[in-house]
Image 1 (cartoon, rainbow over the protein chains, first blue to last red):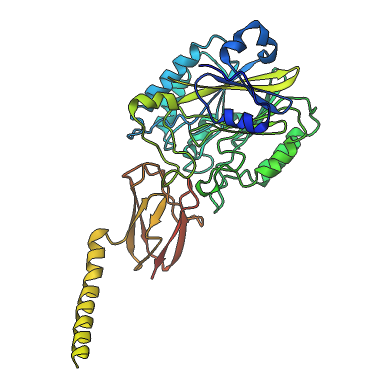
Image 2: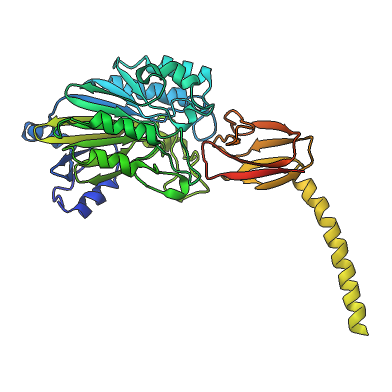
Length: 314
Length: 111
């Protein structure tokens, strides 16, 4: 893949490049500007300083184990392919974040199969948040039985890894009538407390299922009370928000905050407004693998920046 | 005079056609059934007599649920083709949503 050497440093230029989203695209966020970096160039010594950082993390999303309709009759198969792809990565990510919709219908056998498949990752550390497909029977049910320990059953929690502070949020339990996700007052209060006293130079990674910014309100692509959450995060020098739910990549940069939604490993969805609703999108079978994939995140501390790489199965 | 006869004839034909319409509606969709199609509950308001069992059927490729925010009834996640039933014994208006896509709202009116 050739790169455009004349990098337009204006935001408009960066946004144009963001729309590309093809295999192996690597972006480096530095001083609030996102610049595309040719992957081959990045591998060379010259650019090494720009892209090496501390640990590499993996984001996987929307595995939808249990889905079996036309858009992808074998979601377990594409998840296995994804895992094989990840296991073959030259640099092994330190941990995996699953941004939800692990299962399709919250069924025990779906969670069983998902956990069994995910244990095939050679990355042993897995952190999850639920999607709305995981909690269709409400709080205290199957998802929480299996993945709730980290959060005492609440679903939201935080942890640190190599100087990076990770925050797992749940925005699929409190849906409002406008169809957007919501965090709720308790979780917002917890978040404010969790961030208090942390140095602004601490790199933060927030992960939640629904987009934490409004991408398309008619389809519920957003979180109604995320503004309050972002107000607690704004003072930090590097904030990366990782979301899923929409089964396609949409990205936005706001100062030191990068918002990013990942692809699914199961099936794509239409782009905003291009269909009756946010359901499975059937594509020709030779196109499917190009629309499924994972995201790698590299957090740099000097300078404070985050680099995200979205890759597809084909 | 010619006018009046013609008008009467038109009215008679129209009445017969209107009488026929409810019959064809009943054949197009089972009575006491709500379908989820294109991210909508259809019909959005269904009126039934107390003691009736209502059936919901999901026709979308995306799962939906049938959830009464007041806790009166709640389905599991319904895949395409799955159904959920609930028997309404007590008169009243029962609003409900899909908990996965809460913009989907509807009601059952029980008389």
